Length: 472
Image 1 (cartoon, rainbow, N blue to C red):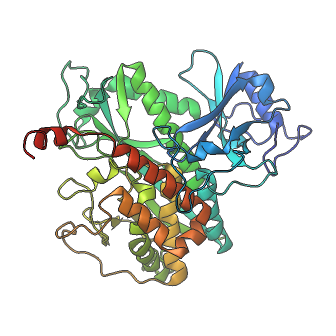
Image 2 (image 1 turned 90 degrees about the horizontal axis):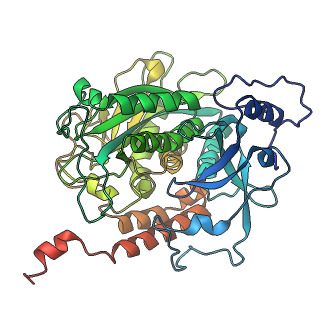
C-alpha cells in the first residue's frame, strides 16, 4: 500500500489509539483500529469534480497490505450525467488515460454506520504514479489555496452551513418533487423557518443523522428548519478548511443514507421545487495568524483591520468570476433569482442578509465574513477553495471594497452571472485565478461545465411544451 507523505512506518513505537472515533496517525494504528472493530471491508473514497464519492472497496487485509489503488484519469473529465465532453479550449484528455493513485488520508478513517457488515471508509488524495499531487482534483485544489495562506503565516478558519430538502420518493424525473409526510401523516408546508414542530415531524430521521454522525466523528453545531417545506439546515463548527470540506462531503452522504432508511430522499439541489426557496451552503470565513492564533481581521484595539476590508474587496472583485465553482449547474442559477431569499448582488454589509457578503455581529476575536452565494449543490472543496482564493487575492492586491450596504441590497439589477455559460467564461477570463487555482484545473473544469450545459440543452422542458407547443 502506498503510504501518505510523512506517515510513520509500521515499526513506529507510538501505541495505537484504537479508541479514536475518527482518524489515526499511522498504518500500525490503522491496522489495530480496524482489528478492534472487526472491520471486514473498507471504502477508499475521493470526491470527483461534482463532489460525488468515487473510489474502490476492498477487504481490510488488502488495505493494510501492499496494494496499489489506481483510478483512470478520465474520472475527472466526465459530466454529472457520466458523459465525456468533446475537447475544446484548454480542455484536453490524457492521450493514454494514465493511472492516478488513491492516497489514503488516515486522519479521515471512520466507520460506515449504515452498512450491515462492519465497514470503514477513508478519504483519499490523488497523486500521480510518480507520487506528485494531481493539481486539478478538488481536495488538492483546496490544499494548494491553503498553501498560499501558509506561505504568509496565515491560517483560514471556516464554518459551512448546509441547507437541504427532504422530498417524497419519486422515480419519474418528469414529475415535480413534493415534501414527504412527517410523523403527523401530513406533508409539511412552507413558512416553517426555525420551527421546532417542523423538525419534530422528522424526529426519527434526525436521530439517525445524529447517530450516524457521532459514529463517524462528525460534529453538528446546530440543526434548524428553514423556510421551505421540509427544508433543513445543518451548521458545522468552525475549523480547518480541509477538515470542514471533508465533513460536508461525508455529511451529504450521511444525510442521504439516513433519509433512505426512512423511505424518503434528501436532496442538495440548489432549487428542487418551483416557487420555494433554494438551498445554500453559506461559508463563514476568518483568517488567523498561524503563530499567535489572533484574528488578522481585527486590530489590537478591536477595530477592523485593513486585511479585513481587503478580504471583502477581493470577494467583491473575484467571486463573480469564480461563481461557477459555488453555483456549478444550470439549476444553481434558478436559486440566484430576485425575490427568492438569495442574494443576487455583489454587495457587503454588517448583519445584512440581503448582501452577498455579510459580516455577522461578533466580538473582535470572531470577526468574519459570511459568503452567502454558494449553493448546497456545490462541491465543498471547490466552493471553499474559490471563496478563500478570492479573499486571498484581495489581501495580496490590497483591493478596497465598496461602502457597506445599509439597506436592502437586492433591489435593482442582478450583479452576478445569470447562467452557467456566462459563469464559465468569467472563470477563464482572469489570469490571477489561474495562478491561485491552477490553469490546468480551470481548463478541465470549464470543459466539463460546457459539456453539462450541452447535455441540458438536449432536454425539452415542461415550460416549452406548455407555452410553445400550440402558440408559435
